Image (cartoon, rainbow, N blue to C red; front, side):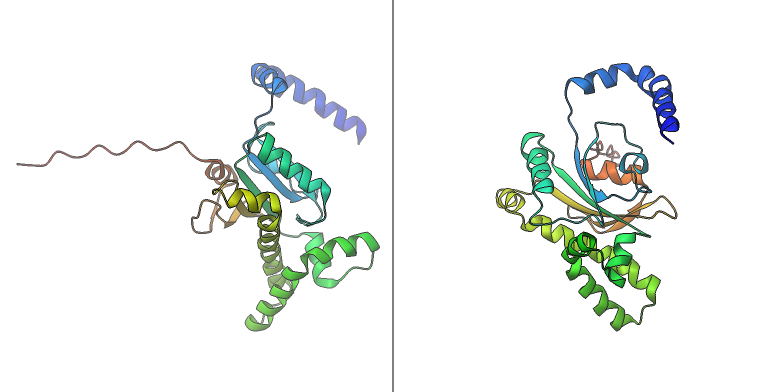
Length: 227
């Protein structure tokens, strides 16, 4: 496998890096990511690939079940560096279907560190339990609900961190988005639109473009009135 990875790097250099050398040389001098990504460590979930983005687009933090922990110095340092020093204005918390962490939250887990970590998502489990009882959901349906509720809970945690709370007291930046990546189809559902829009589904590339802001459209020309 290691040889395959090294061969893959050689292919990347010849087919991607070299033809776009000007871009990568500018990137080497300074990074200017537009999005801070908080996602799951799952090997099936690649934030750059699913959004068709080049290196340099996103500042990335990944962990089991895309959790935002209050006592996690790692994510706190990443947030501070991202929004204070890199001036990133959009944060995406992205969960995904078929997540082993989500299944472990539902079923329970006995491994020491994993169990302690997943306790941070207890609020999402409680919400999913209530919704499942009210709607009579089966296991697969409940896991789907739990996945979405976990994204929403981690956004709540994020907004309650002192750094983000103090920034939001002064304005709307950083905007916080909640996404769900479907590993079965490759598509992204927008659960929380940080710009205040209604939740919607869409292609990953379009969704990322929406998150970082699209170019303003020119107003349509007015038709001349008939006399």
